[in-house]
Image 1 (cartoon, rainbow, N blue to C red):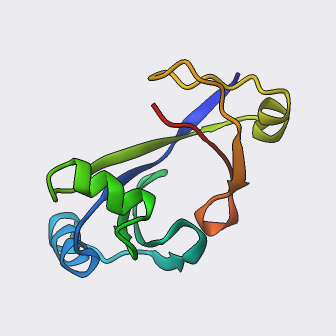
Image 2: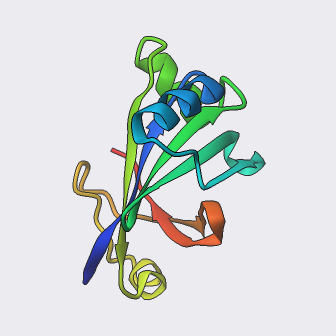
Length: 124
């Protein structure tokens, strides 16, 4: 599999508005993109840093994946995922050849991710 770059680092946050203010101060610029993705029960904000991004994620439901992550983390946020861009993601997923490094499981969940980019998701 051809690794291209780290596309983004997803950071779960309990309060998106507060986190956006903090990252704006830290990085000296505002977020480039934000959206709510109802299917994933999440609101997001992206900050570009060179050719990668930081994605802040706030759950819109305690039962959503980010809500559960924050609950397991004692109410605190933290790094939720790292998105790695690869060549030919569709063929890799359709042939079920992507293995998750942390769990060794094969990625089987396919969907367009935020900003309509193709993605395969796996969990440890």
